[in-house]
Length: 185
Image (tube, rainbow, N blue to C red; front, side, top):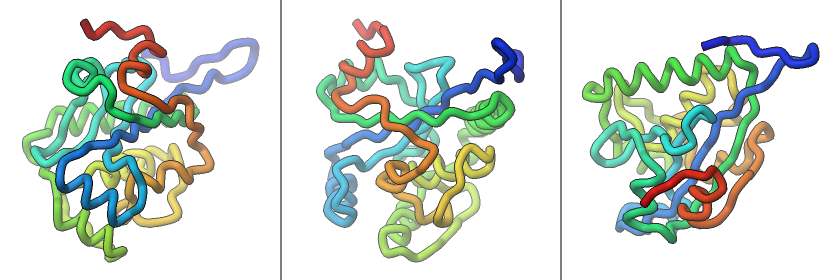
């Protein structure tokens, strides 16, 4: 894969995506109540595969497929943000995601970390992540964005405030699939 792309003398930027979803389980409803923000889950993806996003859920590290969500809950609400980055930053994000994928079994979800983040108390437990902490750490380590707070305090709402992020879709999962011409049947 080429790391530098030029067209007409200008470097072509690559896109990283942050997907915010609304889950309706008891933990998500409690988080929605505490944060007063509808979207309770965050994941990160790359422009090379718009069906695949990466995150943490109660079972640990997860490779999420939009087509799977569409089959289960087609009307699930989502927000999609895009961040344009230089090819080398994009490659760093890609490598970090692949490293997490290869070592998925050594990572765990942290309910304690999420609870403390909701209380604005910083707490980092090595190898343990909640969804938005994971996304924030990938973005920060790659240099894709500058965060105004520690990764262990980031919640889904914080991604809507990033100067580098542009909202490029709001609607249902099926609408998002149609936007990117992904087939889920």
